[in-house]
Image (tube, rainbow, N blue to C red):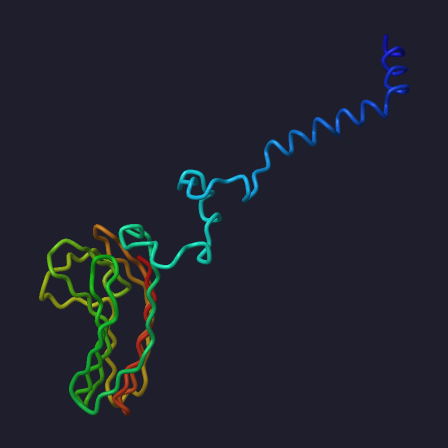
Length: 195
């Protein structure tokens, strides 16, 4: 029986090879869809592969609205220098995790303080940071700090870095760096957050 099958294959090998190529080529063509095969405006979100199908160049200007981006995490980053000859200067950073972040540099002559402070309109968000590892409930008009650094004028330049998390309806986490130079009344503030 085996000898009969081998004899058949030997005498018809080219025909069998052509048959396999023809069937395999048809299967490939049936599973390949090109741009010309798609009807305009017929694809939906469920038809696209996650995180790979649509690129920025594929989107028509003004077609994506804020509602389309609800719940999407964005990274925010700021690095800057605040300088004061005396007293306090502040700068708004950004809103993230349902909380507004602001920074300040305070030079009182004997010491310089740099900090990042969360500002909330209503109670609810909770914060943890390298300075405060226990959860702190954020309240309006309450002084809490994502990070704070106080350096005496006699001590020279000082710096620190740390991490933080804000837990609310939309949460955020990030890292920050603070550096103060009391002799020049300068504060250098860097913050990166994702939320």
